[in-house]
Length: 131
Image (cartoon, rainbow, N blue to C red; front, top):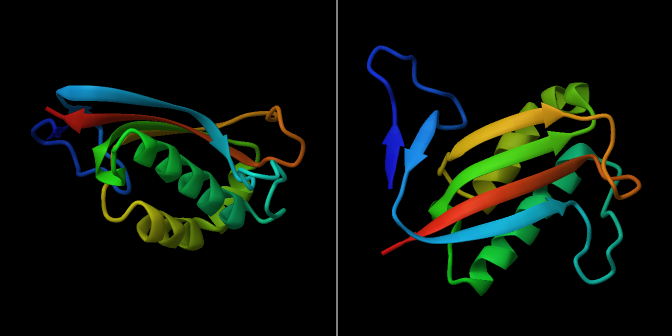
């Protein structure tokens, strides 16, 4: 895996501008902050939902023998930009607790709503298990 950092660009904070990788690709559907057994949203707290969405993502990656450090790309869909920004420290801690200090290429997009009632965040993930 190679993190792409064009010369002269400031280092991205909390994500990478690009990643090049070779290996087995793993695609994870949009995961939300729900209990995967009961399919009930775990909380009305943004960070709690975010943490659960990451934990769900890691569980799916594990099924392919992939780890969090194999993640090359994520797209987050959030319903409340203010809640995300207000919880930025806690979101960062949830990230480090679940994913570690690995920062793939990412985008965060504010959306009007998500399919599941009460969901505040949905995360799509692509990972590459090296050859």
